[in-house]
Length: 192
Image (cartoon, rainbow, N blue to C red; front, top):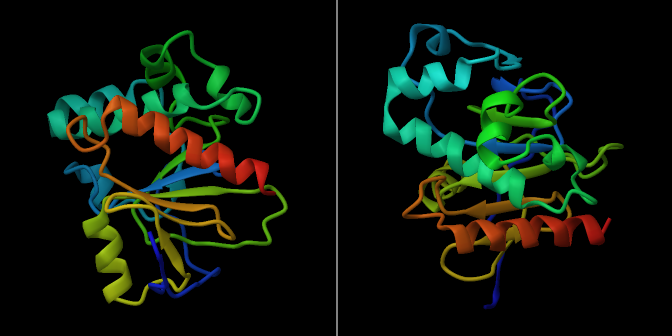
């Protein structure tokens, strides 16, 4: 596919809001927050507490369970030589329950627009969940980076280690697409 130079506006001073490890190496950006009082007032990036992912899934429904399941499946699909934190669980389910978004997990689920910095001393990888959210960010000029659309579902920016992919839902991001996303992220590691 030809290169598409959609732009995002870069803002390295933006405040991070979401669940996850403050020293994350992999962040997934989602447009909405879980519909829970404690999430409505969250104004910083904080590690998930033990059992918090399960509590969010129970309180907020199947959609959020799918987001966490797909995120854990992605982490588990990553090459542990390139992403050592992917070896923490014996299965994607145990990774989800015991490590995902917790302190030292190196993962984050962010509710703010992507904060990109190509000069990070410890490289960070960024995933925007869903083309619709990505197009909204483009329209609102929240970030400016050129994108290469690999097809109708995946776009990348190598310099910022950014991927736009289908939303974290089984129907949109199937197991084969999770594997493809893992390969795309591994490709960024090889180009550092």
